[in-house]
Length: 173
Figure 1 (tube, rainbow, N blue to C red):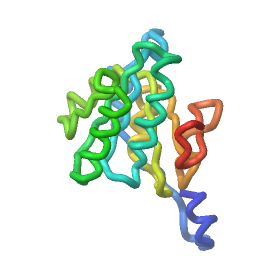
Figure 2 (figure 1 turned 60 degrees about the vertical axis):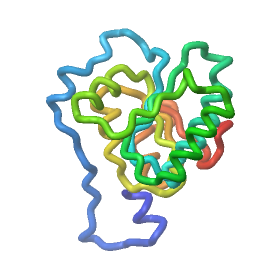
Figure 3 (figure 1 turned 90 degrees about the vertical axis):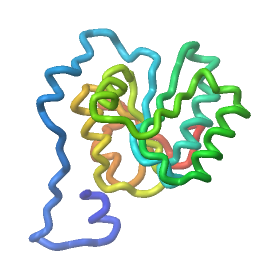
């Protein structure tokens, strides 16, 4: 990402940033059709601590009273067993069992269905992701992103235009 290049002072006239892409055919099947944002929030990605899913669950606990019926779908490979156990315990302690669903890794068709049903895609990363594919998938589905203001995420989520940026690590923000 350009931001990564600036932070790490990569100054090379031969270096260019080429963002990742998603298949354009998805655009035909995932239009919102004027339904609005709905009450479903989705996280897509590996289930590891660097991705900040615990922050998202903490934030959901504060949103439940403001937005009755809100639901979080956590989708992705559960590669860090201890972290997943911690997340499930958090959900239980916060009383969010009916609000948060862990889907694990799903096939492409299920992923498309979940993303299509979501109103908002959240990227709560703690680490400076340069160009997450999920940001492109969200855009291809016309979904606003809520993302940590870290790494390359601000290049893909324009605060107040295509989504909202929040302070990294801050579940209240």
